[in-house]
Image 1 (cartoon, rainbow, N blue to C red):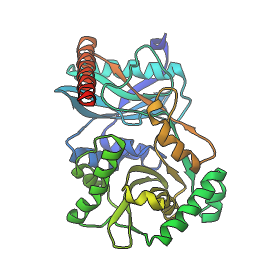
Image 2: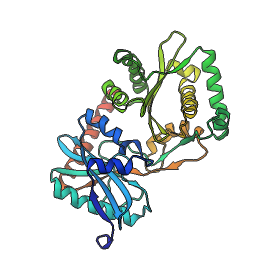
Image 3: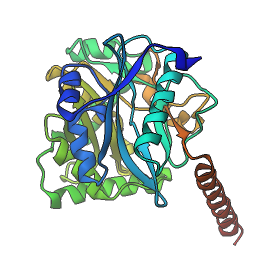
Length: 349
C-alpha cells in the first residue's frame, strides 16, 4: 500500500521554496516569478510542498487558489515537478499525502488540479480547461540559424526558409516590443480577437496578457511582434523564459498575414532571436494525442520544428469532495447540452 512508503510531504516557507528551486530547471508555472503574475490576477499561493525520501528532494509542487462557479479548487500548473524517479506508485503516494494535507487545512476545497504521467482511478478529465500531454520543442542550443534549421524535419527546414523569404518580400518587419505602452498593446491584442474568431475560441481579456508581460518582466516574458509594410501589427507571440528555456505561451496571427506565412515567419524569427541570446529550447506548448485529439491540427503545424514529439505530464482533476465535484460535472454537461441545442437551432434557421 502507498501508505507504507517512506517518502514524506513537507510544507515549505516561501524563502525555503525560493532557495530550493531558484537554480533548478522548472516549468514556468511553478516558479517564483509566476507567483507574482498569478497574484495580480487574484490567484494566491495556497501552499508550497516538497516530497522527500530520506531528506532527498523527489518532487516539488506549488498550488494556487482558483474558483469555478463559486467553488474553490487548487491548481498546481505543470506540477508536481519531479527531480527523482517518477513512478506510478510515487505519484499515487504523493497524491494521497496531498489529499490528507488539503483536507486537514482547508475543507472548502472541492478538488485538486495537478499533472500526472500515469492515469489512475482517482484522476478525472478536467472540468473546465484543456490540457496536453505531448508537445514539440525546437532545439536552439546550436545558436547558429543554419544549425537550428538543420535539426528540424525536412519540411520544417524548407518551411522556415520559405516563410522568411516570403515575409521579407511582403515588407514585414519583426521586433521585440516588450516595452510598448498599454495603449499600443491594445492594438496588438486586436490580432488575437481576429485569431479567436477564425479558430473558434474565446481569448482572455487583454489585461491578462498585459499582466503576464508586466508582472513577469522582460527577464521572463517577451512580446515579439510582426508588422506589415504599413506598420500595422499582423502577428505576435508572447514568450515566457526561465533558465534559458522558452515557451511560446500565447500567439496570434491575422488572416492577412497568412498570405505571406506570417505565423511561421514570426516563430522562426523568435527562435533565431532567442537562440542568439543564449536560450536553448523553444517549446510550442501542446500537440494532439490519444487523450487530446482536439490539438491534432495545431500539432500538425508544430511538428515541423522538431524531429520528435516530447511527452509531458498532462493535467487531471482529483476530487476531494465527491458530491460537490459531481455536481460541478453535471452542471458542465448540462451547459454543453444547451450550447449544442442552440448551435443546432442556429444552423437550421
